[in-house]
Amino acid sequence: MLKYFTPGKVYEVLLTTKSNVTPVGVVREGETLRFKLFKGRSFDDLLSTPEASIQITNDVQLIVKSALNLDTDIDIVSNKRWRWIKGLPGLYGIVQREVTLWKDELGETEVLQGKFIPVGEIQGRLSLRPFSRADCLLVEMAVLFTRFKVSSEEETCKKIKALYELYKHLGGNSELAEYIMENLKYRSE
Ligand SMILES: Cc1cc2nc3c(=O)[nH]c(=O)nc-3n(C[C@H](O)[C@H](O)[C@H](O)COP(=O)(O)O)c2cc1C
Image (tube, rainbow, N blue to C red; front, side):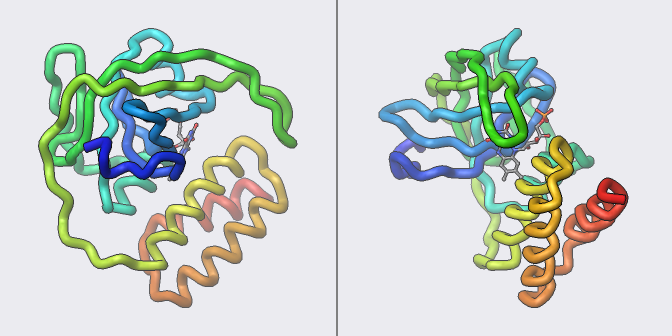
C-alpha cells in the first residue's frame, strides 16, 4: 500500500482515531507517513491513544463531510486496538507523536507532529469515479474553510469565494459548497 505514495508528495487521506475520522495531509518518508495536526479531537485522541488507521478514498463528499464534522454514511469496523472505515483500502498502525509550537500569521499554537508506522493492511476498494476539477475545488474550499473557522481572515474568505465561482462554472453542485458559502456569510457578518 505504501508503494502508491510517492515520497515527498502530500496526499489527502482519512485518519481514524479512537473517536474521530478526519482528513489529513500525509507525506511518505521511507516506510512511514508524516502528518501535522492542529488542536482538535484527533489531536486529543492521538495524545491519549497512539493507534490510528489511514485510508485512501476518491470520495470528495466524504473527505469534506469529515472535515466539517457533518454526518456521513460510513460504517466503522473495530478490530482489537484499531478502528477503521469499512470498505476503504488503507493501513492501520502506531503513531509516534511530538507536540511542538507552531507559529504563523495567525499566532502561536500547539501542533502534533505525527509519524505513522504501519502495522497491517486494510482491505478495501475504491468506487469508480471520473476525475473532476470541480471536486478538487470543493476540497480546496473545505481546507480554507476549516482555516477560516479559526481565523476569520478576510483574505481567506475572498479565496473561498473565488474558488466557489470556478466550482460553479465547472458544474459543481454539491450542497456542501452551499453549506460552506452560507457559513462563510454568517461568520463574516
Ligand atoms: C482535504 C483536507 C485536509 C486537511 N488536512 C489537515 C491536516 O493535515 N491537519 C489538520 O490539522 N487539519 C487538516 N484539515 C482540517 C481538519 O479536517 C479540520 O480542522 C477538522 O475539523 C479537525 O478537527 P477534529 O480533529 O476535531 O475533527 C484538513 C481538511 C481538509 C478538507
